[in-house]
Amino acid sequence: MMTKFAALGLLTAVACLGIQPVWAEHAGHAMVTPKQLVWADAASLPAGAKLAIIEGPLTEAAPFMFRLKLPANYQVPAHWHPTVEHVTVLSGTFYMGLGDKLDTSKGKLLPVGSVAIMQPKTTHFAYTREEAVVQVHGIGPWGIHYVNPADDPRKAARAN
Image 1: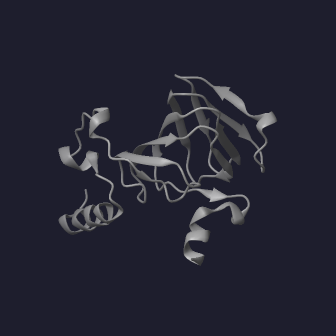
Image 2: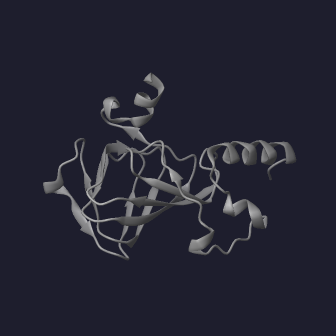
């Protein structure tokens, strides 16, 4: 169970990011409508992606859930995650593929309602042809590690 100080610290950190912790409003019980989602830039993804945290925190060994809104013709270079990643396609067209490089000839179309489950450290990539919304969930801590460090937008942000 989270102490009051840990909870306060977490809520402060989330507030600084500008992301509303919908999951924290109900002490473990949540019913969330799309209008309650607060979208913010997804700093760990290339520019253009928006993130809305539904359940978290993403940085702890706890359940998490978030949505990503990706614009048309968007690409996420090859990467992997330290824990299992579950992705559900909620709208639009979404493609995923396995490998160390983004290769659209190797991507698989995942139409609305599709699910992808990536095991830890499985290198994969994603892209869109039209705007898409996907929901990601798992047990944290969640993270993204790019195969090619030059693809990591966080490194470019730190260099500026």
